[in-house]
Image 1 (tube, rainbow, N blue to C red):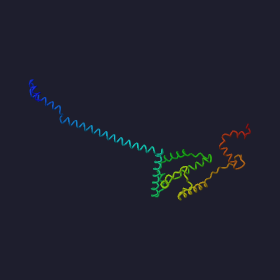
Image 2 (image 1 turned 60 degrees about the horizontal axis):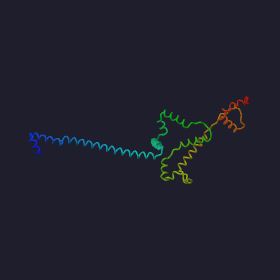
Image 3 (image 1 turned 30 degrees about the vertical axis):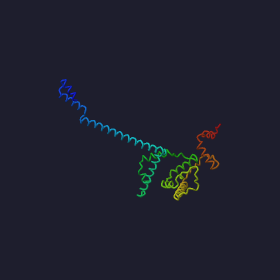
Length: 256
């Protein structure tokens, strides 16, 4: 450095100017406190953004894992699980409502009807008629099916007893084609009493039921006994519209 200063002085450059130039070069080489603080601030900002991105990535991975687990559970459930769950929740609410009404000494059916609006009642009645319309008697098989559906809708399952039986028998509660069921099931006294009460109710209703048809004294007698009269009535009901013209021609004597 001294040699460079002496060389410059030999060329006629003042030593003061040479010293000032060296100081300026040193200041440019070493940044000041403000530049260092700005660089440190930018570094802290980049680190903060990196930590935020890392946390977002962690949260996304966590939520994705939870969704995968929930989706796997949903896929393993039966297809109508949501409907069954909603139905069970509604039945539990109904049972709690019945207990509350019984504690207050009120009739649950009356309380339930008081909460139903006229519009809802009309809509339910239209839906009931549309779902199970009474088409009259067609054959005995259809009548038996209609009675079976009506009786099964009246059955109220006992969920508490069902849970007890499931804990007691386990997988044996769901028999297969290879299961031996004869003599293994003993019905409870409450179940037998419920069946007897239902049968007595059916017998009482059947005794009160009467379907007498009006008898017309002026009607034509085209039968030889009561059984033949019923057969003719059935034939007229099913085929009368097809044989009306033939019958009229036979009565007028104009049949070919």
